[in-house]
Image (cartoon, rainbow, N blue to C red; front, side, top):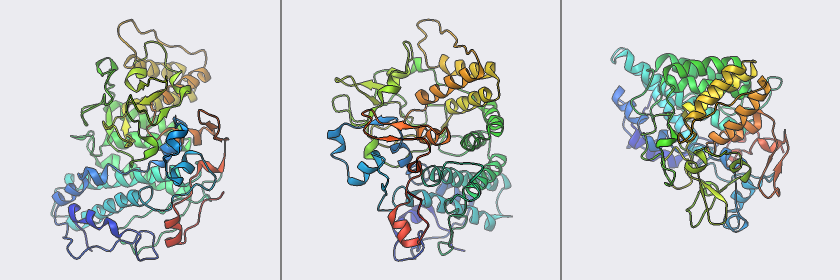
Length: 453
């Protein structure tokens, strides 16, 4: 078995999808060296530029969180224009970065899982457990994100027959994988995350590393995606019992374009992950705003809500750009990780759906006390019914989780229509375009089944 160190393995990424009939054919360089210890494995996992960046971004690019002016859209490639405009035939030509880079992370995770077998009996069990849990977490995280782009929204009635994504579980690129089913995808994700939660430490020394609290949070997200609200509630509860810290936005800058800088200082984050760069998502500057936030969202923020100042910045023409990125950069690399605010909103939604109006509103008010100005006393919000509570929670999800890649999943799971500001482009509920077309390069090299149009 050939297992390779991170610094050298990364150099072979250019071999992806080249001179082969398999869609992920990696031919390792003869200069690569073997993984020889748990320390080598940890070095590979700690390579932030490989394991924590480059996550699929077209799920955010496809959302209705933002819009572009015509002058900006004219500067885009034809591919990006079609993704933005929800053109039925919109398809990436190349596998990289929406498909290739995510599967490269999967490849690294599989290398670790195989290396652990060779290290049994020679390495501390706790260290091996942490490595295995981390690798399973990374692989599951990627599988979930790819499923949001390239599989149909989860439906219990059809998940057993709807095409899934290739579930690569070995590092051998000669192993061929079909698409399987959506149900198999979510079964694999939940199975691996459960195991990871049992192997990882409660928290990590830095949020770029997986942990039990992050695995439980991810399980809550996955179960919410599939409509299993009881399991989503159970895992959200377990995650919040370990960590429930919320950053008080009264301590955040209302003028900075990077209010959550430097990286790793926002203790609300449970797992740090960043999407691939997308020109569709670049916020620009105050003098030259590029990606502009949907005014429907801007108008939802009430007086005293600090998110309108911290997450958003007004331009001279009255439009707003996004500055609430938990990845403190000014380009188009958006945070897509896990944080306490999302877990709290998951629990609130599950409470509301189960009829626990009090629990839902308690969680909602806990979040909002950390988001509203403390210059005047915060007045708790109330709900007249569980449905009223659910409506409020879903509205807060849209305001709080802005530009994190979660709106696309919400549109899909809630079966909602989507529109751009100009109403030139729209998606009706249940539209086939809520599932993106797999890149042409993948279809050509693998002969894989394409999503319907």
